[in-house]
Every structure is written in structure tokens, then in C-alpha cells.
Image 1 (cartoon, rainbow, N blue to C red):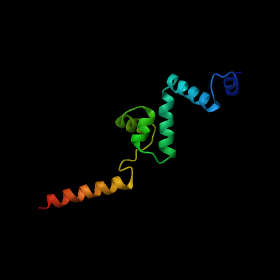
Image 2: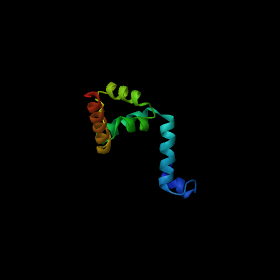
Image 3: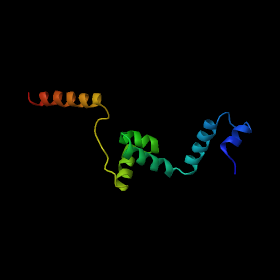
Image 4: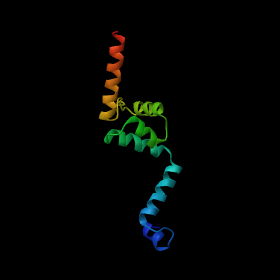
Length: 101
């Protein structure tokens, strides 16, 4: 069996990390569904947004929402940061005051 060490020893790669990264890149190209599964896993286990999960999976925001739902995961929608939340509140307050005039 070929090992990563063999690839580095043969000077095909400078480092083991470089060999692993290349292997992962080729694996993802050969099996694109892995990107989707990884994005779902990271969405469920990490605090990432639907948008970031979509970028990881290589799909649109709307597609990612559908993918999450089809895997029984309820998308968490809303601002991604406190700054975004404050901006949304300010916008709502501005429009709320304007409509009261």
C-alpha cells in the first residue's frame, strides 16, 4: 500500500500536508456529494450560517435550505452577527418611524 510518507520520500510532494490536501481535492472532485454531507455536518455541529454552508457545498443559498430540510435539519435564518442584527433593528426602527408619520 502507498503511504503519504512514500509520496514525500519520492519527492512527489514537499510535505505530507501538501499530499493530503491534494488527495482531498481529488476526492471531492470525484465525489461532490461529500461537500454537501460535510456542509450539513458543519452546519449541525458548528455555528455556521446557511450561506457559509452553501459556499462549502458549492450550491446556492436556496438550494442549501432545501438540502438541509431534506436531511431533517431546520435552517436557522437571521443575521449572522451582532452587527448585522443591530443594522436590521435600526432599519426596522427607521421604517417604523417613517410609516407612523
